[in-house]
Image (tube, rainbow, N blue to C red; front, top):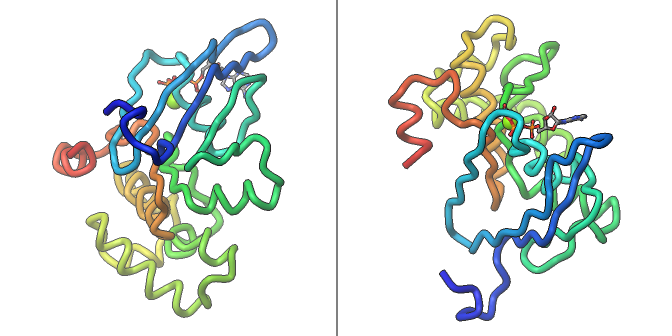
Length: 189
Ligand SMILES: Nc1ncnc2c1ncn2[C@@H]1O[C@H](COP(=O)(O)OP(=O)(O)OP(=O)(O)O)[C@@H](O)[C@H]1O
Ligand SMILES: [Mg+2]
């Protein structure tokens, strides 16, 4: 879609983004627009910078130069508090799951909501069960620890955590790795 045809800014707008580690250029002038209400896929070889780009948008990593706007707002210029707010509106399924080993699954799923004091622990536990069902897991999985799960189950728990706060942007870093084909089809579709 041609953005010049619409007045609303794209959901995500990136201009001339650069990020290097030492003398290794990872992002070398990335520009892209993701219109609202669309899916956008980034494909690239291992080590090409996909995860680094997502981390920059999430504010987990600071680019060397360039701009990132969400709904027209310059996120790199935002205050730390505002960046936290913006981040809470983005769900992220990390490539490796990134679950907290010391917390039961239900607490991993509702971690963001609990951290923002949006739920009591009792409510969170019940809510986690419902979210786990949405990703094809039994609510009782909530009482297990990540180490007790298979790789595919861990991935689903990571997905449950990503959607728990009903974010308005969802990032999937390698969404289908470790999942069976049926689940992969749901996400890809
Ligand atoms: N914190 C870091 N410090 C130094 N180098 C880093 C750091 N994070 C990423 N890199 C380097 O940046 C490059 C891009 O990494 P990135 O994780 O974005 O790749 P990717 O495209 O996600 O690959 P994959 O498909 O394997 O997940 C790699 O060469 C990696 O070694
Ligand atoms: Mg990656």
